[in-house]
Length: 379
Image (cartoon, rainbow, N blue to C red; front, side, top):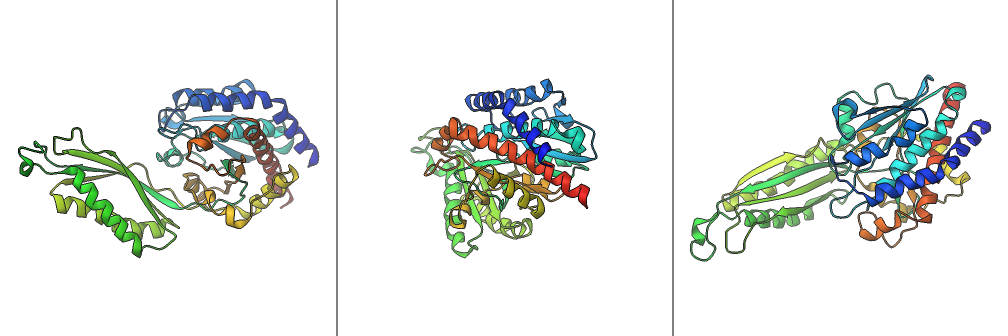
């Protein structure tokens, strides 16, 4: 179907300036998980002008949307992420993810009638810890979709996503305040509870498999140095190769927080920030098509030693991949030595190299959608 691919690429090229502007606007106005009100309105604007039917606040989520075009039998979903990191802005390049998904959708819309495609762009909030895609799945999104795709910026190009399963927990301790000098014995120190827990986590790591991760931060540790901290809180992630392994590991980690409470006499509260993110199940045939399309565009995939890093990052797209055929390739923006979740990486998410990666990603995803239709029709 070379003519369909040519038409899709021409459409992306035609809208390149608008796609770059979208990416720049998102980058300049970062919004964190569940707060992406301006972003959720901004991302579908171009789709709306192109004739997509846009549903804001999709399935009751205020910062989600669905944009739909076409009526063909093959339904292709593109996921647009646009949440930023607290304190770091778009240091994971979600501005590029959103723009590339919009670009791919425009490319596919140009051939939707001839190819027999229905394009669905899902605006998916709160990927950075809130599990927006899981919320959408639980409310019925992605039902009946034939293929779900997105592309994620990274220092280098990597085709296959191999993310960890992960749980996200808010940890809180409640103790009792007291004057730290005059009446220290009257206090119950909630900051000490975290100290005990973090030491226990450090020791636990000696007995954990190398494929697991436990990490977090204390977000509130007290209010005044002369008052015993009464309330402390933090956010912790536990990662493992699969949801099954995660279910075995997480209770061991939770016991370290219980140890902090037991040692200090504090009350412990654990709240899940979202349902766990799943490992990724790649649709191998579609990934092979993406690889070929990316190479045709001149992209070069990194060797395994470099590749096996960012593609291990967790994503709620893993949950989508458990129920819908999916791919989640990474596209390089030439940022090394800067890597994701660094301020320096955020700086690389705008500019000529990032723009080329975003447009290449849009074209490669659109071409991969065309290949998927061709394969289905040939079956």
